[in-house]
Length: 336
Image 1 (cartoon, rainbow, N blue to C red):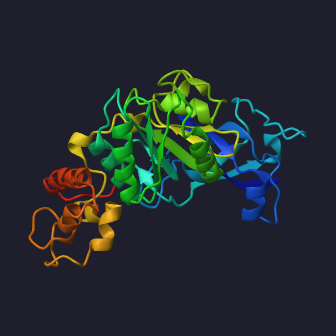
Image 2 (cartoon, rainbow, N blue to C red):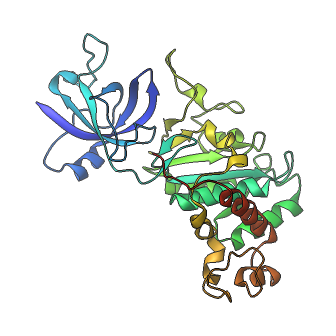
């Protein structure tokens, strides 16, 4: 008998894929007339042919795919049964439509991006935070700002909190050392993570691993090491990977978020930039000139809002940086 269900790509392993199959509840909702004996299992498998998205994209970590397997894929107890090649008799048969798709890091269907900075050691880089927020905004990813190490500089932490709350983003002040804010943020993120994929982004040394350990003790990370928790084959390269969490979601190990090339910022087209600044939107249409660039024009509603203290000056400085970089680039083309 042949079974069809859905799976999520957790990582690539030397031309093969480690996947997590839809659990029984999800499968029942998707395919109410069928069963899936391997529901909820994770296994190593192959792709059926050279799969591509409609626009030519290859399989990515995070992809939700169709998975087909037979009775020969498992034992009576639902344990994946290896064939002579060491793999269950099944295959990823199609890449389903993506909600979003990132180039750097190569990851699809990301739901939540937690942007972590520190009040000090290292000093917060607001331009980096703002660029990550704009990338998330363009791709329809829920963004959250976390300000860690608040015990080191409370004044800076408070200013950052005001900046990003006024930019209309959920913002949390934390101190893993003193336990400040951990319970509140833990409740917030775990409620939203069930069945979804989250990534933590931020500069080295801001305390991402310490925070992840506080939220998800099963990870038991050393500083800077998510991927040690996931056994790798000898052919696996240092790429994005998903790690299943006990609460039912996935944590993305995305080295690309710590190595993003912001000098050559090209994550969305120039014309899309204004819409990626969330707090700017309520002022669009109020400028004196219809083609206002919100950079220096007289009668610009954005500049007026900055003067009134409604928009943080640092946010506009980041906008100007992205504006200059994107404007100088050749015509932007969407890539898979």
